[in-house]
Image (cartoon, rainbow, N blue to C red; front, top):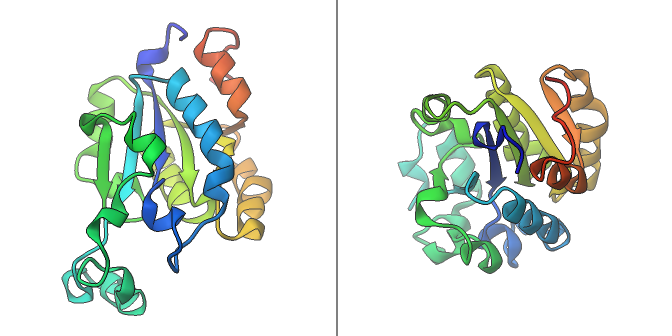
Amino acid sequence: MGSNAANVRHIVIDMQRIFAEETVWHTPIMAEILPNILELCEAYAGVTLFAKFMVPAAPEQAPGSWETYYRRWSMLTTEQMDPAMQDLIAPLAAIAPESAVVEKTTYSIFGVARFADTLRHQAVDTIIFSGVETDICVLASAFDAVDAGFHVIIATDAVGSSSYQSHEAILTHVLPRMPDQIELATTASLIARARGGQPRANL
């Protein structure tokens, strides 16, 4: 890994059974992007975090509009669903140390208290995002990361969505509008960068 490895975090967003298996939130693209995510986890070993989207036991335990949201998706609250469905999918669960797993109850990982402060304390300045969904939790996390002052890299072939059209729109039309803050890169280029074969762009 390059000399600035300690200043980078690779964050895998929501690669969980609840999205991988046959639920109403099923996201088939996960199987396609998983090999790239695993390669990034290997290349950025020791600086990879794994976000998990955690659901409430019942809708009334969620605040504000989240209660309305979970009344629609009540079949995915833990009173009606096996809580183990929130686990990381098996290949990632096998490599994710407990200390690297971050549980969130919001779209953005930055909804976790003091998450940005923790990264700053660790001198992190760059965040690579992979996972699902490009147009929801990845996007929300990326915007919050930018607002917190981090340089953001989206691994374009290691993110995906249940909506291909929305996924493509984010990568093609939305994120390119912020080239000074958000960089789009392939898994191969990020692996080369981790190994010192390619300098970091836009910095």
